[in-house]
Length: 177
Image (cartoon, rainbow, N blue to C red; front, side, top):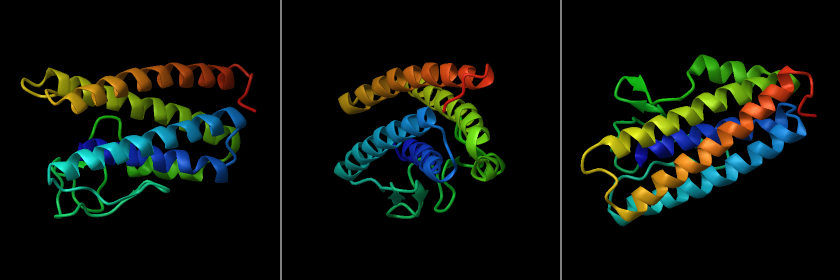
């Protein structure tokens, strides 16, 4: 859960840039939906962790910025100030600092195309994390965790399909505007 909170926080961060980076209406709407769903899921994961007296990461759900989890290092090994880090490697799908900088510097149709490519990468990573969880013996036995993983799988698979269509429209000149 701690790792998935960091993963979701990065998606919120990326989506929060759309209004100030000239995103087209279709990408802007997608970003609004992603931000709302990811914030809601972060809140649910925080409640799940708190109910079990586990460290809860400090997340600014408006910007996706992460601080230190209560208690220092989270269960995933993610250290304060290093969202998406599990040990020494990025979690599946997480954007590198260079990719985030590239997206943050993009505007207009360039932002749209990069956002879609990078969010597809990001969502595929979440699907990998869900698959890793389901394939771990004894994991996902908690009803909430199983339902959460199932919902992430269904929702993000559908969003990947939608983003592929939007990206194809941009690539073939239909635009997102």
